[in-house]
Image (cartoon, rainbow, N blue to C red; front, side):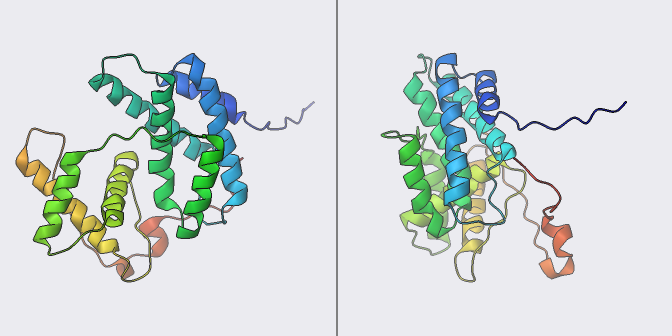
Length: 231
């Protein structure tokens, strides 16, 4: 006799809590932060516009939790004092914002911030500014004869954070929106930082320019399998 087994829906709140515990968050905050993060994903899925590149499933949730664990590790490495619940919450928010906001459309950014304020009232991301990178971006802009606004600097830093979190990043936008300027500024900044200290973590990346029309689109950027569904 064969018995049909129905696949149960995963408990994302429990998964988030366990993952936060596994990356170093305290038991006191893991349950609360996991529940809030899952609620935020659920609200974003229903309130933001449907976009093909948006992902509010378990894969994106796990990625943010892993990023928050890396931020917590770096924070403890530089700060010997005990990490408070407020710091843990701020680091999770920083991982969430750095991973999510760069991929949102301009119309959805304001709505996302409203959801963020509802789920995490009165809280803000634990910002860890990298002044060396920002100074290198400014120096590179002067070499290129560019005058940068705060928004452009923020976008370059977002691209840097995305490259630290992903093995592949696609910069999308209409013609003349500054896509090439972003990666050229970041590449130049990496070069200045690596030349300044060869023994540091900064390394000069190699650039390979290719004609996108020479490769099939699906082979170039991949495709989304319509048969794959996430909870």
